[in-house]
Length: 228
Image (cartoon, rainbow, N blue to C red; front, side, top):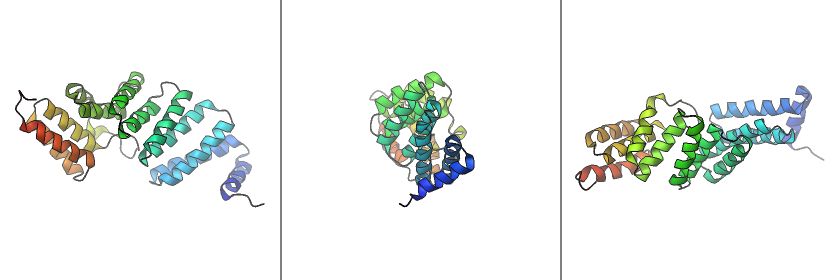
């Protein structure tokens, strides 16, 4: 009977590492390297292998983090339902984990539930009040929902230029700037809104969020203050 290549590789790794935890940690490092190289499919495969081993070892803490890692990859791949499910499982094992809550918030928002996402981002910020990804996410959904004052407060707390580069989760700089432009327009600050939208457009002219917000900003800035 032939051994599957993946299982054979794991068996070889186990022989070298002399324990399953060592194999799991190797798989985790391989997944992280795949993320850095932009190979999300490979990252998902390696995170799943690490996750299976952590579950087998009954290591709840590492299982939770592996679930959170895999959720971020699924989010980046556009599989929002899977990202939400995996994040929820991670939160079950690590209650109050800001990273998992933030991933869940983005998954809910992108799956079409901005109100749920706002609540989830707020839960993340309860545990990590200065977390840039959660602030950026909550600010964007608040702008989308028309809560312009609170949106601007969140987006002013996280400067677009400070968002860490190379991570899967943080909101794109162009999206943050476009959402801030929308909040400014909703508050009647038309000139500032146009300037911020121009910055967003310069970063990524074809960004979907920028184009969507541009239409709303045009409508808001064209209406008199009393109508708004």
